[in-house]
Image (cartoon, rainbow, N blue to C red; front, side):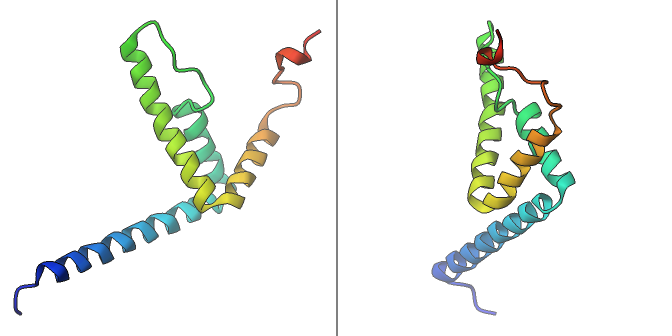
Length: 111
């Protein structure tokens, strides 16, 4: 077998990259297709990555660490919005439905 040209190697690498991206999209859709998968993803984004929490700390190192976690969660949220929009909306609805009524109060709700 003769050695591949630079262009052939580049084309082959591009094809492998496209296949990996498509496999990743299929995997994400698979996880998001079940209520258990959506619950896991919500917990990962909300609790583990702290996307809806403040990341400020007295320690700059802690703040930087928390911001790193948040940035991963935000990137995952954006990917979900782009690649599984309807399932992401369902994830949000299911998460909202899991919160007991009256458990979350906003400043404007208090008398």
